[in-house]
Every structure is written in structure tokens, then in C-alpha cells.
Amino acid sequence: MDLIPQLRKAILTQSLPSPSQSFLTTLTTARTPPPPIPSLLATAKARLLASDLTNSTSSAIIDPSIPVFPPNIDSATVKEVKLTQNIHVQVLDIENLSLSRWEQVEELEAIERGERTRGRQVIRVVASEDGDTEAENNAAGQTQASRTGAAATGAASSGGANAVHRLVLQDRQGKRVFAVELKRINGIGIGKTHIGEKMLLKTGTVVARGTVLLAPETCSLLGGKIDAWHDTWMEGRLARLKESVGADRPR
Image 1 (cartoon, rainbow, N blue to C red):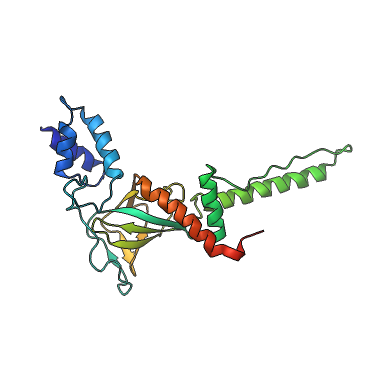
Image 2 (cartoon, rainbow, N blue to C red):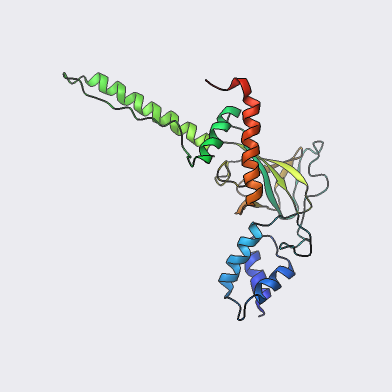
């Protein structure tokens, strides 16, 4: 079997966007002899996931003929419709609907600092001279309550079980559609999901009133990131949130 068909099959087996013929040709002829298939596949995957789906120029890495959203997908007058084919999309925006805007500011600032969990407290319990057991128990209870509250806050802020996210997704033609988690998807979250990341919406995905309803069984997270987009989004998102909270900022 020729190298290009082998590589294409390996790429599609991983549910990645279909590569363009020109990209495969360039990749397989760049070196003589060419690298083994696993090495070529790793390179192709990285390039595909870092590419803009909407780039339809002659140098495009992704096949410009991949499926796109149907024309009425974003219509709020359509009660419900299901996708009739697999569609690859990229993430343009993400918001944690479970948090207030100020909590979202804190979340983004923590991510910038490299932190993921906030609010955890440790209370030191010092035994009294007469061995006051009740005081120790009360202190221990306060410590446990503090940790429980911190865990709940962390679950929402880091994309845990209690979080609900809204995303803006874009197909190859540039059409943008809102998407909301119908069921929790562990890989979605601020600090987890990157701008430009690729997703596969499978056949049967439900779209209600112009919004894609995301569920683990119909949505595959493929990874990837467009660095320039992500950096711009982080800076702009944080600035907009800070401006929106304004005078309501906690003192």
C-alpha cells in the first residue's frame, strides 16, 4: 500500500479532520526515505489540530471539503434538529455559566498564575492544657467544612461535576454556533479547553433553538490549540470581565 493512503487511514481512524492531499504529499516527500507511519501520524496530528479550519487556501492542511453545519443550524425558530453527519468544529469562546462574572475573573487570574484550586484553608488545632475535646472537635469540624466548601468551589471553577459551560463553535465555512453542555463533559473547562481546539460533533448530535447540546456520547474532544487566538482570547476575556464587574468588585 502507498504511504499516503496508509497515513490518511491512520489519521481518519483517530477521528481527526480529513487532511488535504497537498498536505499529505508534502509531509511524505519532505524526507528521503520518509519517516515511519507512527512518526508521520504524530506530525500530521499536531499540524491538523493547530490549524484553522476555515483556511481554504491552496496551502490548507485540512481538506476544504469536510462537512459543515446545515444552513438553518443557528435558527432559534427550529425547535430541534439532529446532525445527519459528523462535523468537525473549532472552539472560539468558552464561558463557565456556573460562576458569577467576578468569580470568572478570579478563575482566569488564577490560571494566569498557574493555579487551579483556590480557597483551601488549613486550621491548626492546638490542644488546651485540660485537653478540651469539645474544642478540638469543633475545630476539626470547621476544618472539614472549610475543605468541603473549597472542594465545591474548586469543582465549579476548574470545570468539575457541577459546572456548565457555553461555547462558541465554528465550522469549516466559518459559521458560528452556540453550544451548551447538556451533560457534563470532563474535558471541557476554563484552563482545560483552548481556543482553536478541535471537536467532533457526531451524527445524531441534537441542536435545539440554534444551540448545540453537548453530551459525552455525541461529542469528542480532539485537542489542539491556536496559540495566537488563545493568547488574544485570554487577554480580551479578562479585560471584558473586569470592565463588566466594575464597581461591583469585592473589596
